[in-house]
Image (cartoon, rainbow, N blue to C red; front, side):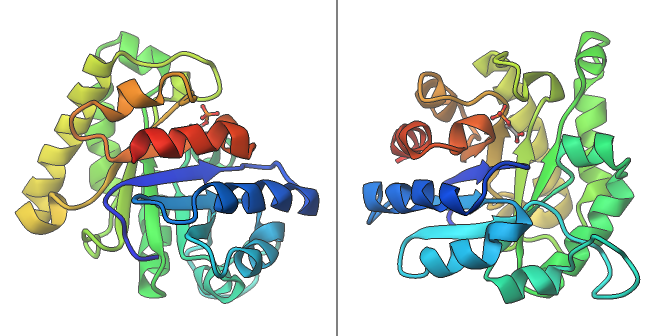
Length: 249
Ligand code: PEP
């Protein structure tokens, strides 16, 4: 992926069969010349068809996870190289649903990110606190710990995107205040600069994710240190995702 500083990324999760490719076609028609990056991460079964269908459009296609090993006895898993072979340019890693459903640790995420970056994928690394952790005033500790452990030393401005996704905001319709988003993004930015330096750490795009909709996107994008969004439910239909892209432009 040609790393765009501003990025509207859609995570289709376990949704979509070939019929859903019509939504991609509609998205590409609506944004023939966008000033921001557009990425859709469909289920693995659609990556090859989707990337072929979007080949002459600005819409890029990504994966939702990959294995840390390049090949081997891992039934049901997909390697980073396989994603590239299918036409993906990036991959989401460490989504809270992977961390919860598959007990992925930040160390697992770091190994996957290293493998993905080694084959040229842009890694979108997700961090987020639970409601209990926020209510216990532990948000920055949790985010700081996840950030330190999930990002390999190979991260730089052109191969990494960080997505802040409070778990309690995903799919719930609850959204943090812009002050809360600002506080966490500012914290992440400071830590990235401390670890990777001003040019690289300062250049890694920071996405917000969690119940982003056409109606709240503009306010979220006006927040400092928000370079775009990782969108779940509202990325499934072009009519919902398109106004979010427009709000980012
Ligand atoms: C997500 O799962 O990454 C997400 C942000 O979901 P939603 O937009 O549906 O809250």
